[in-house]
Length: 103
Image (cartoon, rainbow, N blue to C red):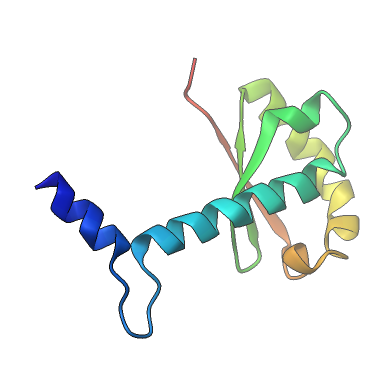
């Protein structure tokens, strides 16, 4: 059963990306977006946030703690004009913050 699922991940459809290709692309995008965002935030706070997605005008962020999320809520609006100069963040106007539940 599990080998069948792996085969499904690796199978290519005619004009579609495989699920594995989509996952790899998403992961690559997340790493790039996070690196770009972190360039605008001072350490150590920059290491406490990751970009999980960009959908329309929203940037979805995952923070390591509630304290980091609170600091970012106040910091990010002033950083937004500079972020919008980058192609990936050009149309974004809002941040959606979430706190990781990992201990």
